[in-house]
Length: 338
Image (cartoon, one colour):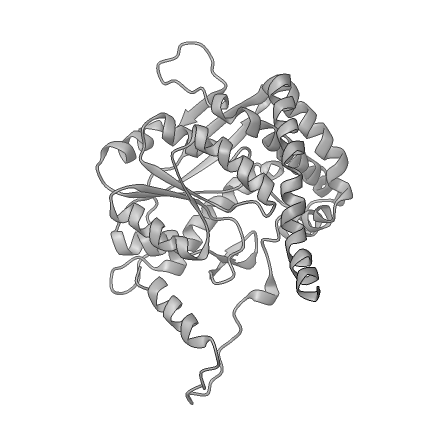
């Protein structure tokens, strides 16, 4: 009986998550019935009211105070509300991902989506070489993967599955209808991502989230940890690295902007410096966020000072290997092969 109780306790969050599937499907159906304009307006209005009541709002305001000490508290609260507005719109837009991107280079009439730097996109697609693309949680961050699939770019998007299993399943269903390759950022997925690039494909990743085993970069004036995967792949395969962002425009429109390939810093041996490369990418993202702060995901705990690496002890004496550390060493060795 005790074992059964423990099993139910551990399974309850997952069971509760799957119990929400009918609710989420109903919301998706409602958003589709309302259409893009009305559903996104409703999502924005809802989160502008509900968002400030959630604990994540305190995280957003704390992040804004640290990032913009020169702004007034009223200005920071306005940006936080804009961020909730954007998140509400993005959530509602999942019901319309298959029709949201309508860019056509040959179109004569205005379209919902415009693209800047399309020549870099075509160069990536047609050069026969692998390539890497970084992005951030700005506006509707799903659109670059849709653009790649629509124009025949062999690209795999790295994504972090939602914690709620019901939401994860439904989001996956929507993504697969409108995107190309997808790779969940699970511990063992790094090998699959490496194979994408090794086979001449393109890998896209959002780099503006905390990564516990990452490299230290400066972002909006504070140190944080960034996932070094793209920098390691760029060093190993000597492939170009581009940045892409989405800007939300008035009247439900979007602009995608693809940068030229970045000139990444190199180490003394001529190879790409991993930490320096991640800093270069992060600095591009910082510029994007400063330009449109209300379109970034401030609710995320991007800065976690307690998880930054501690200074190494000066002693050179060998340290005993504790239980479980051998597996960690093997894992780190494999990851350092890039």
